[in-house]
Image 1: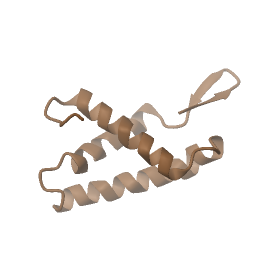
Image 2: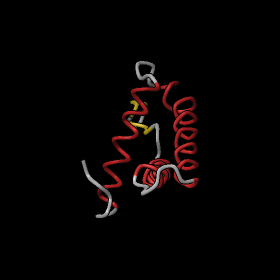
Image 3: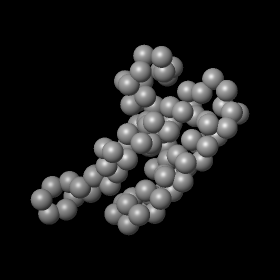
Length: 92
């Protein structure tokens, strides 16, 4: 998600933030036992991070993007990154 500003596009979500989201996504979405504590905590942290990113970076600059659309975009992006990152991750 880029927004045009003077000097070119400015990315709303940084590469570092996407890496962190992807790491959390792998922990809960690729978990063998999603009911275990670690995957549940990762899912909670993933959701909190998405909510924070949406409130601070996406909503102010992208008025037409609601949270549901942003969450969908983030999950798709994280899944694609996870598939590229590890061969063991199930691709869809």
